[in-house]
Image (cartoon, rainbow, N blue to C red; front, side):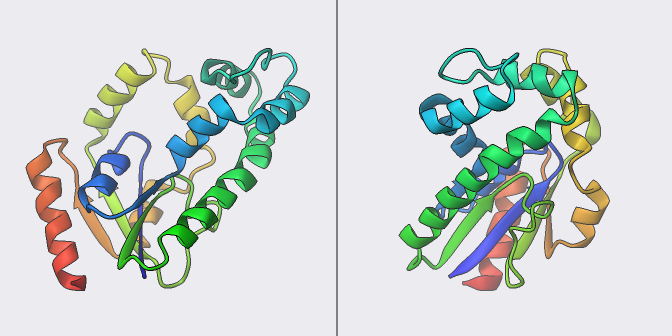
Length: 189
């Protein structure tokens, strides 16, 4: 099985590009959202660590965002609880798809958390800063404080690009990214 790991800046369109490959995708952000909505064990742990922010189940992302904005150290507490759960879900995904030719890992902090393996094919999604910022302002309703805090935990974008095997330019128009995906797939199949 070949593992493609899709990396890039926050808001660069990694999840969109990951889906374009047409193979099973492990989307860490979606799995984390499910944990917040459905996993009571995570809720109990988060409530214990962040009692001033986590009041009810399911866990609300806006409360976690407030915790991170109020205190940078809270992201470490959240990660310590959520990361092992995501790792377990990823391991289950890998077992389920072990006979597939290719799987796609859409894990925002893949390199930072040292989840990537030596043989992974790293694909960097590159997008214009202006377009990324426009999309993030829409998504976070103009509150970019949370993005600034999260970026502190990421490797520099240029370092990710340098450590990648391929770069896909995402102009947020399907044709360009689709053509890049097809070119990459032709190399392997």
